[in-house]
Length: 136
Image (cartoon, rainbow, N blue to C red; front, side, top):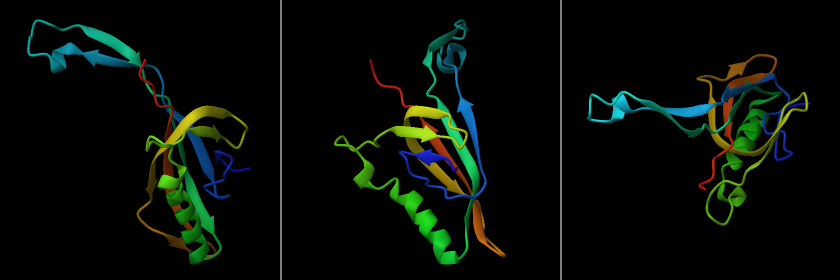
């Protein structure tokens, strides 16, 4: 079972890995942003946005099928999936093992530098999802 976002298997059935990239607190060192060199304190300014990265390979039998997968991912960024505010609508990201992250936003998609051709067509990818913090 592949990774899904909002119930859709955007990345096909090729190999996929999931890693939780950012967790913890945002730290600000005032010595790097304050012009007062005597101020050297560091402060926690709030939680980091949780970031989950899905990486792997898009795999298809033909070049056209590979482009169909790529277009499906690109369509996840189209205005049709955005809310009334023009912001992306968050959804559930689910790993192949059943682990779920609620309220995730698909923020970035990066492809490898080349398409590999052999018995199948494939390209490496990395997709970044974040649980965006809301203003209080």
